[in-house]
Image 1 (tube, rainbow, N blue to C red):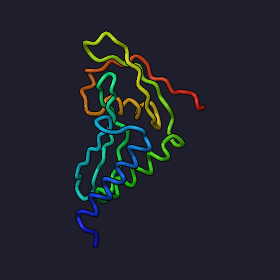
Image 2: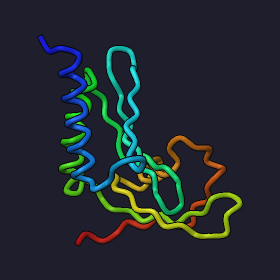
Image 3: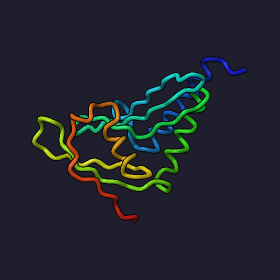
Length: 135
């Protein structure tokens, strides 16, 4: 039987692997866990240091914290091969600067969902969504 300490140590180890693989750490990468019935949901969120906006990177569900972190690590290691790259140009309400953000998603609707995650849709105006060519 695994002790609580081992679960926390394993969780921290996997989170560090995810951070290292993405090259993002500290306050720029947030792990949000939520209990949903008999599952755990993990929303991995990135924070852009330039314009201080947060966006959904990916969501996974699993049986427990370690399971969902393992699934997220697998996603992070393979997402570039499975998803398309999108460029979204947008502006926050009240700003005068056009921002450009990049997302990996199955389609443009999923990319927009990642942009709007956790915010009122009326706070951002999207000017363009472009699927980037495969390189």
